[in-house]
Length: 388
Image (tube, rainbow, N blue to C red; front, side, top):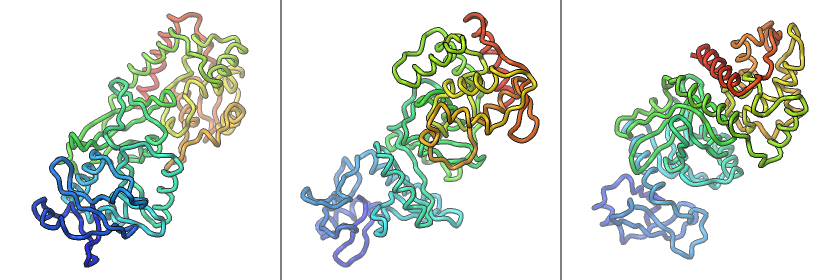
């Protein structure tokens, strides 16, 4: 930790002093803001100056932080101060028994910046987030750059904690912010289009800490949709050429459903497995839920039939425990509505009134892989052209 009380009950912030001044203070007595136990001021050359509990301590703050995390917290604190933003380091809230990495005030709101570099149980994340809200504080999670797992250009692998760190930018679109204390730069991952439970397509951009303004972290970047088109097309091609392993119950049930309707998993209609906005809100891969929705709601009907968003959701509830599949979210938009709107762009549906559509045509399964791949490319190009 970077703060402790002196014997005179003054709070000493190591980030506020140069190293030579801290060396003069090293032999004084300091005490933990939480447990009041004596702590040790460490001023070495490898790590940034900090306070450490004694080995026998049982304090809840005696968990230690990695060098990577402590340096990042220190750098972010100094960066906010440089941006003339009122900032406090390591603020402890006794009513909730938790310590914020950084508290700052921006646009008449109090924010808690949590710099999360390690894994965290979801129960702890939810408790921290809820506690901040109860105190009237806006939680703002920045992930450590060590958590950024790139699959390939334009595709990251996210776990459940990463999903819960998503926030909305100035355009009310979801994005993630990473910060690497080693390279001292931010990474913004925006325009999120998950293709599976863990892999997410999007746009990754970087800003050096020394050049960054706080408001830049929330700016909407221009998205090269051609990259999404190419990556998603390649993914659909792989799914058609390489059978999906039956390694879980959901995949086995999905294959049984397709075979029951006379459809090969390698030859599903191209209207299925489309990238849709707000997919990040649910923990079901798009190729799974779109299969059930398209086959049950559209393919088994006749042109001219009216369908609604509520009908679509009812069908999905019959296949999935939706209450368990919806992630905590900061928006009420859902991918099911986006999918039906996307089918309107493909002239499969036409809008009648809000959340009500008429079936215009039925896309039958392709007769072979070559036809399927051609149709995939055609549908994706048309859909992404509309979105641009």
